[in-house]
Image (cartoon, rainbow, N blue to C red; front, top):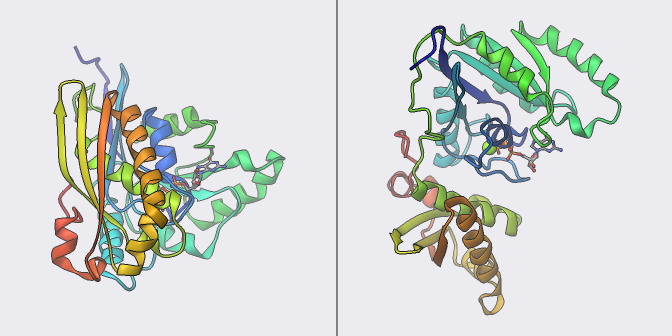
Length: 301
Ligand SMILES: Nc1nc2c(ncn2[C@@H]2O[C@H](COP(=O)(O)OP(=O)(O)OP(=O)(O)O)[C@@H](O)[C@H]2O)c(=O)[nH]1
Ligand SMILES: [Mg+2]
């Protein structure tokens, strides 16, 4: 039975790359839904995380960081996903860092402000601020930037004040039945998550341009008795990148494979056998057909 007065609705997490949107999503849901890394432009998709309680269902939408849609087709794709994710939602959470406003925050601020949707400002990473009084000038400055429905300092890392953030969001949700079944946590498939867990390891293991030159294609995802068999290809843009990914004697790829396999075992609660290949497709990030093949399509996976 659904309680009288049950609320549900969509809340988009918006902000420049690297402010902690995906970390925040995972904390709010209490599960790993979206991959994170210390590098900007980690998230490439619109990823939904669903939190259902006895009285409400919050459907959070994680988005690629808002950056200038310059250059390659994949960047334009990511920008489209971010801007499209603020349409028709009940509330927007604009995420900035407690270190203060940056020029790069302005595109996300402008995008949030263009809608006639309530915007809650989440000042994230407050665990990095020793003296909390230092937040007061930032809150005052933020107040002058836009008419925020509320300003909530939080830490996605420690979970501090996320209950206050949730309360600030709930008031903007309409009274209606849940949108998704109560037990559902995301709109994404396990197969998609498997590809993301490989990409997360690539983001963690290599520097420079490698993370941005890599796309993952899962070619086999099969649950057998007691074991999940996964095969995936790491696509890169150049032969030189392939050599870096593999490493001398295959050592680096082996390490990435082990870490991704362990992450999958944790995620899916089963033994995993993982085989990884590395292949080159020149300029895939600028090639419409390759993007579609690697899952960068408007339709959610
Ligand atoms: N200290 C601290 N670090 C955080 C916090 N939230 C996120 N981070 C770190 O900030 C970095 C970026 O986090 P992500 O969640 O990947 O950021 P994002 O906004 O999703 O980034 P994109 O997907 O690139 O747009 C990671 O190294 C996180 O561990 C926080 O509350 N405190
Ligand atoms: Mg992200």
